[in-house]
Length: 236
Image 1: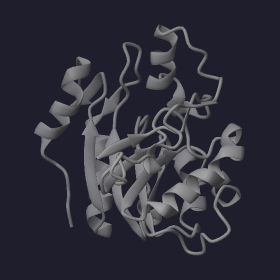
Image 2: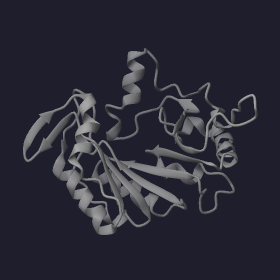
Image 3: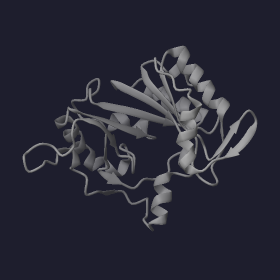
């Protein structure tokens, strides 16, 4: 597993961006997140060792987790990234996007029905957002599709959008002022996934977490641990 951030910086786009970790981290470092810039890692997937082998070994690559791969400001750079993705067919590239409605404007000419080594994960956080984005997502030519409902801000029904989805990931918001995650919402999405035979993962609790009507406040280091302890992941 590797990380590739060809550019950094992002702009808030939807309700789920309110307490985004990218903006919080940049604020601490006194960096303007709204400046989208290339990074030193732009050519990371095709960098080679002295012996000629690639530095990144075959496996999964998390792509653009310090920005959004479909952000407008990166339009001039993305084609070169697609070329590197094609060259490294031995790697599987996974990216999340809040801008799925830009997808058809951002793909290469030879995309056709999708690249085998690209996983696209559409992010949603509420019902309005889910209905808009997932109605677009379901029609797109992508071979590997995932949905991330993180941060999940309310109970949502996504069952009618789950055809051809490989995985649904659910999680809460991490911040002192975070909006609460209700465990019932998580379980409801899990049941939708089971009915449609789609893999489900509870990725993390929220800082403010409601279970059986009782509200809990968790530390950051507890969020993923408590989600794992719930032991509710579903693998078809």
